Every structure is written in structure tokens, then in C-alpha cells.
Length: 283
Image 1 (tube, rainbow, N blue to C red):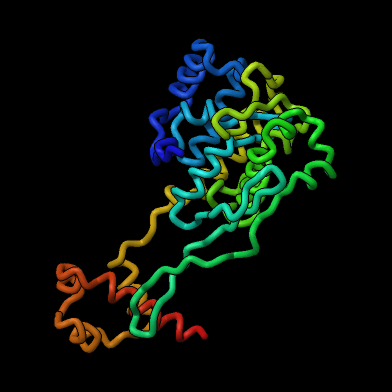
Image 2: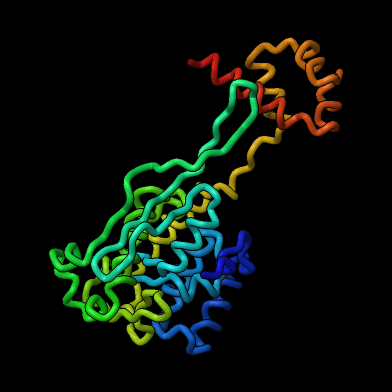
């Protein structure tokens, strides 16, 4: 699976360029499911919120029954590239798929050192062919021809909604057949994809306005759009909050000033130590 799908900064930076790019995509004939400019712009806008490039957004995001749906490959890449989450496939066959999700957490040791641990935030996410039958999903012929891929896709999207919502900036993650069980779906190289010949009706102006508002709100909440305090700023704030005896604290690091502490590369460790002290005072 390629991880080159995701990049931090999209090349399209304003609405005019986005419109031009969307029109080029539509004229290329490569995106047969997108014949409406508004729909193309919604895909690109959501892609921006996720931090992916425009071409990937056009090919890996679908609008089905008025809701956004991501390809399984894109969901998997976003989870693994987050650095905060990962998953392991425990079992995958024609009867069931079981996926264990993991979350990376910070842990401070008594001496102030920071370590990272992978924990299981919950039980494995499981989806079975029997569950599909009970929900009457198997009326779609793709379940008969590719049950392993379909069970995996359902388990993955369910786990993404449960354990990794922040990766998708609050948007629910849907499998295509979850939104429309009768949707023509194909499996190509193990990837569940919507048949490109299916054209979703253009979204109404009201739907466009609602989704654009959600995307705009999500972009504000994206970690990359928030300026985190620098280590020096955090050190000064923690020192103030803790009423730190600064000369005595700096002497432990064999320096006399905070600037010297930073110059010798010891500032990050000092900040971690103060974080531990601050956490202890709040207990």
C-alpha cells in the first residue's frame, strides 16, 4: 500500500485555482463519477481539511447519498501516517475480518523522561459475513465475489469511526455500501471502489452550503492550523505557574540562563521535567 497519497500542503490555495483544477479533472474524463463542478469542489475542500492533494481527493473521495465516503486505501493511509494510531489485521477470510487498533500515548517517568507506548484503546473491531447477511447487504453481488475485501472494509471504517475520529477531523467515515447497499461496487487489487460509471446526482445548493460550512469548521480544528507554543514559551509559562526558583533549577543543568539552556539543547528535557511537576501539583 502506498503512503504517497497524503501530503501536508495542497498545491491549490484558493477558490479560483480550485475551480480551474476541478474543471480540468472533469474535462479529462478520468473522473466519470464527477460531472458537476460543485461536487468536485466539495471533494477538493474535504481533501484540504484532511491534508491530501487534489488528485487524490478527486479519485479517493465519493459523495454518495449526500454524504462523503473515503476509499479504504485512503482511510488506511491516513491512520498509519497519523503517527498516533495504527492497526493490525488479526484475522481476514471469507467469513470475518478482525482488526486491532492501537493508540500511541505519552508517558512521563518519575525522572522527567518522556517515553511512548502503544496501547489498545478497545477490543478488536470485527465484521462478519453473517453480520452482512443479517443486514441484507449480501444482496449486492460484490459480497459473494469478494467477501474478504468487503468484511475488511467494513471493519476498517467501523474502527476508524470508533478509535480515530480526530484523523478525519470529525467527519464520520463511511464505506460506500454503508451509504447505499445497492451501489455498484468493484474490488480491484483488494481495494473496494465505487463503479466509475455511476454518477451521483449533483448536490443541491443547500447541501453544498452545509458541507462547505462543515469543511471550513473542520479546517479550523485541524492540528496544522493551530500554532503550538514554542519550547521556550512553554518553559517560561511553566516556570511562572510553578513559581520556580530559576537559578537553582538551571544549576542542575550546569547553565545560568534559559538562553544557555536552549543553546546547549537541554531545553526540551527541562520542559518535560516541569510538565511532570505541574501534573503532580494538580493531582
